Length: 442
View (cartoon, rainbow, N blue to C red):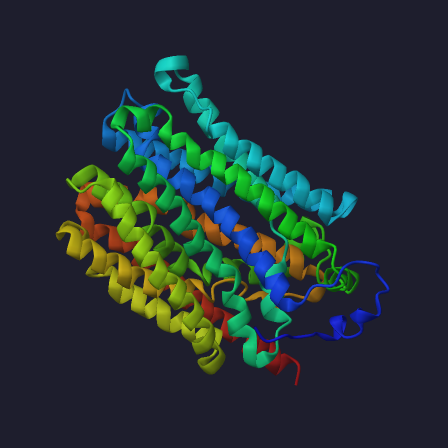
């Protein structure tokens, strides 16, 4: 990977900070490990929300209703995430980033591994539902605190000709996390009896999530003790600002940044969580086979994310996001019907969906971050990410499943179409705003 140094990094190798040095390549690896661990936790819970929690926690409801209840709890993390950002930004200002990351990732690991010990409804009654919801809220709070700013900084501090390439690096964590989570569930579900899987087999991926979080913690701590990170902190690029001041100064850009990636964030769940629920509930397909299809499609997603970096550096990130949004809008009009077309149709749906997801999601991080004032960029980028996940992805499985069951599977495409619309509108408004700022500065 090409190395890049910003003015803030120019004279770091004199050793004044007393920290170890890390190359941009090492920082990128640390970012990938951190993001993979977050998405692994994310997908372990998501898969369990479809094939485990309806039976374990909501046995009194039908399979469909139990899944809808699970998706409601699934959304709680996205609602809690902005609150986590507020809490942990306060910790950051008071005690520093090391304390922030340790406490956030400790909370994330604790909440995740606690789910491995979750009793069922038949054991403790309604308390099982409250414990599941509490653990999910804790995960959301921790995700808010796990934001380290390096994803956007990799893109912003790269050479102008390589910003698309650096922007895609952190996004690789999503398909990698899905591949590992799906493989674990497929292995246990495929090699255990149904009774053993629902008794203890499903719990192992949550133990693995805790172990991966420990590795991710050390990878991130390695980053925050480097001279590069210390210099970026001193130049205010990584300093947290007060939430109220950030919103007052950057509120409009935060909202534009939140809506700009909506097409890719909506598609994110339309090719991961929703199709698994549809196949599990309304077809005779084995969930194991569909998880394998997800793994294969996610490999295409990895390739598409890498390709997005090359394309973005040639045509521009916003142009790629706009083109991807248009392609996603077209995809939304026909693709959901493929889920009712057997294994071949499901594979086509997933592969095309992951290719589109890779191209758009690969450039969705920090697309508007360059608009933020330097003093507020770190905090504004965190809030933008929180809002984008909440608006674009938090309720996607729930809404899509409701639309599909009440109006037919093709209706689930309406959620995708709305995401594409908001992305195009946000990018257009962002362009108008930038043009206005340029005119005002003449």
